[in-house]
Image (cartoon, rainbow, N blue to C red; front, side, top):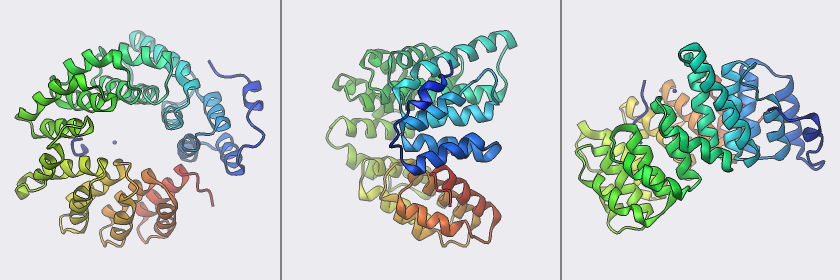
Amino acid sequence: MRPPRPLATLGLAVLLAAPAAARPKVKELIARFKAASGDERVALAEALGRTQDKAAVDALMLAFDVRKGSPREMTAIAEGLGRAGDSRASAELAAADDYLRSAAVEMSGLTPALEALRVAVLGAAGRCSGPASVRLLESALNDDDPRVVVEAERGLGRLRVTDALAMLEQMASSGGDQAQAAIEALADIGDKRAVSTIENGLASSDKFIEIESSYALARLGEDGMIERLEAMLKVDPGAERVGLVAAYYLVRLDRASGLSHLETLLKGEDVTYAVLAADMLGKSSNPKAVPLLIQAAGSDEPTLRVAIARSLGLLGGPRAVLELKKLRADTNEPVRSAALSALAELGELD
């Protein structure tokens, strides 16, 4: 993963059929979501998706109307549906993409907001299994928008679509973000037939491709790849971003060496790298990152505290929530705002 760059509606009967035993917190979230607007509704869409509750998914699907809704709100709802990973949303997402592609033809291209919505729809489809999702993702591999292609690659990997293996192997040698996404997808699918293709990336002049290939081969059980990634941590200061990305993948592989490297950057004097390290920890999905972020939350740098709040929101869990509740009383307004947004997305309403 390269360092971040300078971010059909169901009928009423379906909702009424939701389990009577739905958790009280979910019921409160649904009620708040229905009554909310603007930033609050956007944050609550993510919170509903995180619950992975049937009634919450029903509420999101009832509100998902890309023809009439604002692109920003529909993007948030699509992301919420992706977070829920409910296969029932597969057909709805495919229909939304079909509408957006038709709109692109009529409008001679989508607006930036609608383009972002379409990327979110593809991202959600890649987390919601079902034939409609698979067909959508496979067709999107040939899309003109490279961001859509990347989401399609990632989605096919998450859903472990072995029929896409040959196409992903071909794209793994294309270079850039599409190659990265294809390599990660091959790792997610876990088919040993891809080993020889991925091994080609080890000799790439692009250090990031080399790192991503090492990670994928480690996932596929090939010897020596962990050591290869750990060697990338020992780079010259001018190439620190190589070490940063290697550390990110090691954290994803649950290796202490990656956590230690990012912890050092978090505590370092270079704020830029500290912020990038916080971002990487948040995106790693490794709960072991939470204590490191909490320890760094006492930093005097507000930009770092903002990044920590965002990452704690991504990781979640009781300790993350407790720290976010402290950060919502921070002396810096952007930090408070980031903490409040993260808490809303985690469904913490108090």
